[in-house]
Length: 86
Length: 473
Image (cartoon, rainbow over all chains, first blue to last red; front, side):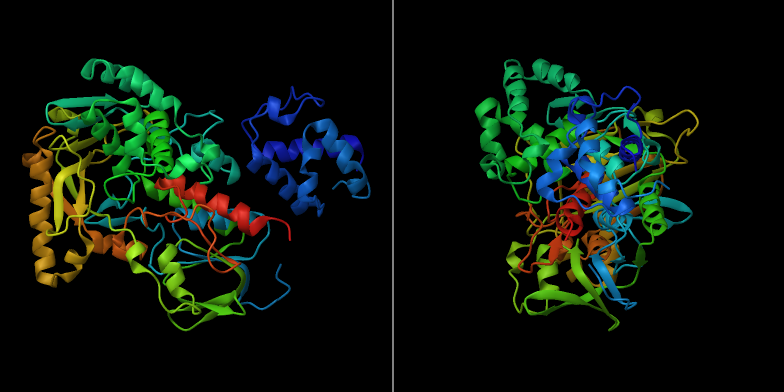
């Protein structure tokens, strides 16, 4: 997956977790927490959905990498570059 | 994770198909676990179940759903569970209460889902106490402090209240609804539990789905099955088999053996320990004692037609609120809860419920009810119904001439639906907030883990599934 495809995938997961949230105006370099109503349960869901959909494993000590869209895509790029977007 | 392809092996076995067990099942099945929910009764729901009799639908537990949230609201337990279970707000679609009251001799406080009404009522009825009430509101623990680690959690709620409120009657009145809707301890309340219930009842408020609890349960089961989850009714667990200090599976009442990597039980703390075959004695004294009788009246008219528009009335007939099991009698109707499911603001397209209904809940002693012969049991149901209604009409218009049908359920009924010791509605007074047991792969959810009520039970199932059953291995 390209960084743009990874970004789309994260958006899709966020939409799944929080269908009422307006994601159109999401700013990539601002923390999710500061623009969306996400708590620790929701962050666990992002991790779990990535595992469910793409078998991507994220160790607990690295959850911090999922702070914003920009850091998430950067963190996931090496892990997901060989995954073919379906 | 399970490496086995054995048809009787599961990643997680869940004991009990109540709100918490089904919610946990949805979380685990959504993340591809092989999950089985086992239920002893022939129907789902546990305490919050439903039945049909004489062509009418009845709910067992539900008066009101606490933790009300409006469409689009993103904070609070209801919003959280909708997200976690991938529901839409419409799947719960709560109609808001019209308004409720706390009625003690000579004084009444009204409240709605907007805390300002209660504040102004307190200012009017108890001059000088409004500031103390606001300070009490400011001192409440937040939901994020509710894992039990905060030392204030176990303080006496009465003690904390007395630091802010100097009028003893107001303390009794504020406690009455909160104890009725979620306190397993007699006479006093843990401050943490008080905060949970205060937020749930006064700050968030009451709502009800038009079709009652069955709609919520049907949505939970549909989602669980749609994700591949298995639900087995009439499948009581007679024992949890322990080998080498780990649970390896369960044996059902009919002798069937199922194995699992882990077990999540909503059966109650003591009830679960008793199933474990490595334990010979459990401390039954730690079980909860508070059980209820509910007297249901079907009316020939809507309650508002005879001037009763209250959603819930919490009443107590003296200045002291007695929150304890009746010892020498079957029931204690000095305090009670009057509920009319008609008095919610339903949508126009939903219209009115088919019948006028008044439900009255009073305190009852489980053991005394169980000691009765079948004949006396039937007779006492009639007698105690009359007593509860006579007690309640001191606090609302007399509706007895409009009654066309009645039903009563007792602690025996509650026991049959929940299998909890003593028919204890809110479980044991000491909660196991982290959900752990003496075994590393057996966990608790539901009433004895912590949060109570429908929303609380669902949140309990979700959080215990997340914490103990989902983390990557």
